[in-house]
Length: 512
Ligand code: ADP
Ligand code: MG
Image (tube, rainbow, N blue to C red; front, top):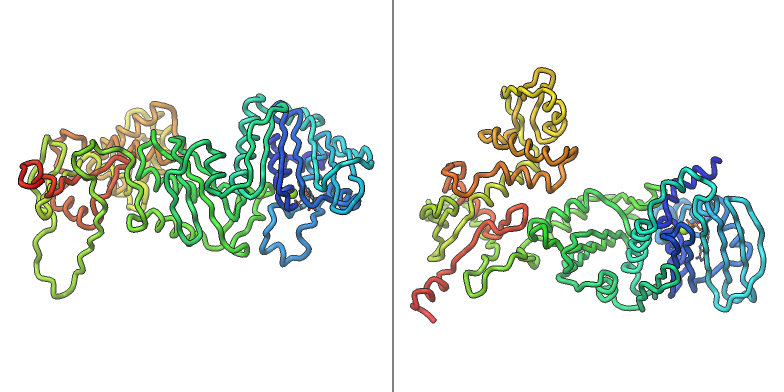
């Protein structure tokens, strides 16, 4: 029983079996790997490879607990280059399935076949197999753990998981030929190719852009799906902080409905990353995560090859201004200088107009305010300022209390009072609370996702048409000067549009 329970750590569903088997095949230096799935993997997950294979002794050892051929010293553990190293996957899988392993090492006459049923050894026999390599067939997963079997989802859902795992590995190892079958039908077949080609084949869409940093390479796929694949040293991993960071940067440049899929390869020296954090090795720990975050930040910075907002500007018309990074040096000798952006007035109570060297700069005040609020909410460094906003509906306040606290409010739910307001919300408390209330109406958000924060910022921001003076012209001019014209709102729409002096001249036929 202990054995079967422990298996749960590694084996959660058919896709996790597939993952372990593909990893083993990759570690075995295979150049061809074929996966075959039946009934979403519930009745069969089989992986065939042409790797180095195992002798009979090695095969017998491989299904024992904590036996791995990949680590022989403490030192190896510190810089793991193989995908497997814990030596428990085959053991765990064979404890909870009808398991068969056929393997032939190079130079051997015959292959070895092992059969194990729910952890019970059924026998070893010799078998004919033409090429060296290994085939593992895992049938009827969890046949001996009825509770877990019941937790498996429909064929369709399990299939989605197995496909995702297959594609994840196929993308990271373009030099290997991969085939994937469902119910005997060939679904994917990738021949050895370049990484770019493999990524496009696996996604069925083309690469829109490639961003490169020192350790990070990021492919943007033009599929509007907004998915994320993260690899560290070619191992598919989850890293919440990293994916949030990247998603945030992408959302500054693309509107939600046009978010590209991001495929992110991080390559660092093996010693700088610990993969032994979690049994399935899906989580990693960087020795210095900030280095990676900074690299990503740099990759996205405008001077590093910008990704423009994807919203198309009407043809022939004005050009979307490129971020103009013009930090003018301030020295002790600086004389009072002409302001770079001269405020002209407001158009339609929506756009603030500025002049800069003969060009007309239009700032969408709602979009700008939204952007600034959003940044301040995200930072959440701002202090809370004592306040006293009574609430009639105590029950509601109790319900939202924790959510409001995450935003920086202090709440005395028992007495139905908000006792402090975060600095960023000062002066617009009503709007913010109103927008939180709205957000909560569509179901109760428990955590602050990017979307949620963007939504709150959007609803709390000055609206087009507002007479509000929340955005002082000088303040806006300073922002333009400091941050350039490339700002976008959290949904990716531009904040600033510039009508070039040349363009205006052409309008008046002063110039061709
Ligand atoms: P780990 O991968 O962590 O070493 P596993 O339980 O996945 O542990 O595999 C145990 C051992 O079986 C591996 O260390 C390897 O020596 C051997 N093995 C498993 N699958 C294969 C394969 N497809 N080809 C060659 N050897 C394999
Ligand atoms: Mg393994």
